[in-house]
Image (tube, rainbow, N blue to C red; front, side, top):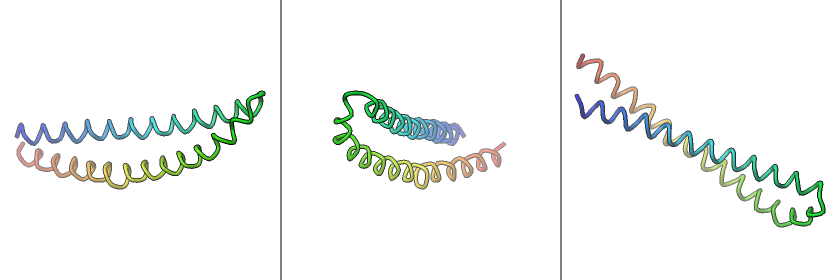
Length: 92
């Protein structure tokens, strides 16, 4: 039973870490967008010619990564949590 409880804890902790990673990616996207917007209104707007292509690449990679996290990892962990919780309920 302790092994199942450990697995359940691992699943929940892993899910939390993955959500934190996804949140950090979103924050990074927002920060890059804010930098670009801030530069548009200053004498440094010429730097946006380098930042805009990087932002597009970053946004594409971020979307792909977040989709993979949600569709693969989070889904798998949700399924495992349900399965392990069911097994623990059977033992009680």
